[in-house]
Image (cartoon, rainbow over all chains, first blue to last red; front, side, top):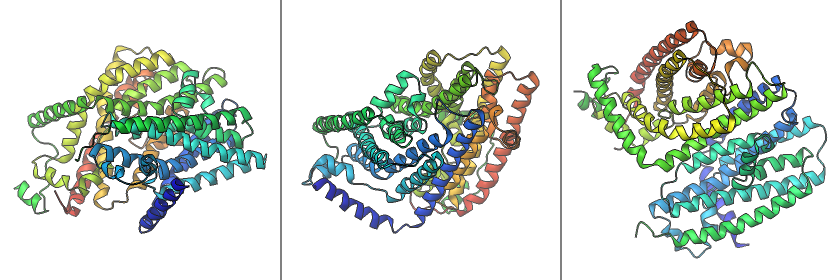
Length: 261
Length: 286
């Protein structure tokens, strides 16, 4: 498993690097705390006006919020940093250095930057999820827990594919810095179950930007709403997306002309 | 005189308000620069705007759902009224985009501020001019988005001529209040670069106390009274409600006067903070 070994290597390097700046852990925790507080205020406001939102109770929406924070932590620590760097490298021509290394270009470009302090959100998300599951009072069986884990893994892989596809566009259009803002904006839709949105938007948030698979589906697994069909669809769509992304990245690669040479 | 002492790290305080003619010339020059720059990056501008539109669409969908569940309206807002509120929100938000407090860190770290200090112009006036100049491009790009949102969400909106006029003036007020306060906030960077949590707390307060999240009438009474002592709602809630709400003439004109009050407070605050902040500045490069 060469990709995994590479990933482990870069993880160790960034951990060593970032452990020098330990105060950042507390800053990150403080920021996550403010975000959770704001989210709770919004949930409280919604449920001061209605007992349930589109059939979702307060603890169930808390579970959605937990998954949203957790996935946000995965994106912020593992996915987005490498993609930001890839985008900059393509623009500035320093991508040349990646091409000269005797490793798979896609794998290397995808694991190079890891921000371990961002992973604080993974822990915060898990805490929020724990509270939500306790409030639900239906317990957590082994099968839903496994389904949840599977849904998170494939949800994360789909978000990664999405990020790589939009970053690959940089091979053609050089300045796409705002894509990060665009994604951050769209990712906020995941704070609520996608079933809430009107049809065209729900479909876009499922197949165009896979937020439904990344946030709503794992939350469904924990709240007893997930059907086996949905989970199978998530896995199949995830694999399909990975294959397509790889093909698209290779096409993009052929358009790289270098800028420094 | 000013330039020399700035280079030595002991700047004489630049003037905030110069002769009006000079200021207008500066604004026109900055506006030209901003328009030329931003038109070059239309695609980038659009990505930014679409990312921004997600926020009100989420609020709109959530609150419309609640309104329907509660038998057609919540807090006096029907889905159509919410649609009007949040579509006007998108314009107000775009007008409200100002130099980010996070930008001060780059500006200081990379030494660009040193170059700005050499000019006989208060850097915050330069920001005000640049972002104001960008607004015509923003409004132009906003029109198709507003049209699309209106077709999808069917807003109910029938403002009087007076409301439209007050709305237009209040946009400028909102822009100035938010610019000045965000500048004061950004200046904290002169004391510490670990500003993330401070800024985030400020943004969270703004979200909850300005009408950005929901119309203020949906908030608990104590939140509404807290908000009345703060500038936030004059940058979001007031302009939006001036156009889509049912404010009396006294409320409309009173609102504009309150905006003027907060502009003056903001200008004094930024001036005072600058006075103390700039003493701490020591350039590294640039």
